[in-house]
Length: 377
Image (cartoon, rainbow, N blue to C red; front, side, top):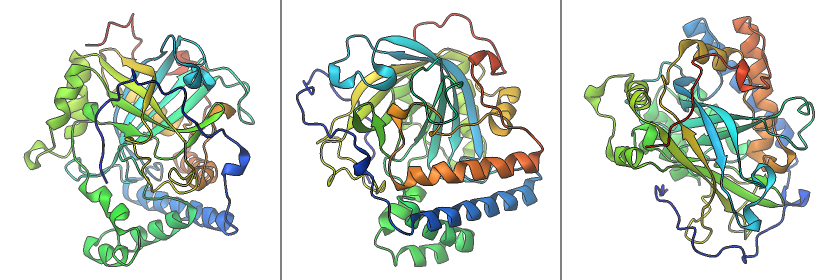
């Protein structure tokens, strides 16, 4: 699986392409999906209970290890072509955001020297429009990313099968691989163990799954765009770096540099070649170019505030189903999240004796207050 770490020249005229318009019929739900999703929710809760037994603290089923937390702004570009003026990107403007860098597995103590996918998530504030049920009073949009372009847990059935194998054989890679090599998606399932283990500030992040993009269907990605960040792409983790190197690298970077990312969308043009239901297939960027709609700007700051870390992990809710209907998560993996995320959150709050909060404003987010944002370096 090739990971592209290059930006796309947006001077190419793309507005005349035949993009697929969203219709509910693009989703095809299998008869056994609900049963598979419930089984996954039960397995994720079992993994959380196992982590609680080890740490006497409950974490999310995945992305349990926080590497950094930062505040910034999402800037929608001016003069976007009409086909990119969708959902919350219809007009130029700025949104406050709070973001978290993470390691994807469900073990909060995972050594950073072990190559695994990394994650990024952001909560965007002051977002207005038609929200999913229960969200009309919460003007926020939650957006999640992963450092691999395809999702190995590609649909509900695959997720059930793979999590079951990981729970049984996760401590014995040789035995796990025996079972994975009997599958048609062997390469997809083993890819996570061979990802580049590099500086998170230079890591491109992907939605992996498709979403509504206003009247269209799209995937999205986040591309490091400052020269300082791009220079870090070749900096990889070495054995002598220690188990906590990714957090330390982030702290060192954010203390002395601003960061900037491009938020890009890849629109669907061919439902056979760009499947909605199966998230294990990369949408070829050579055929279907990434197009920039906004930039994420993060000023210099301490990227590991303990109060903010505890608030994000134990109190604040992050869920891609919390937000605009015009950015609706699509496909089997996202319908799974709609059930599994609340199940994970409910158990976690119960075991940690905390209460979940739907934050409505950046003013509710703890940690340092940022002054005016400097131009990104």
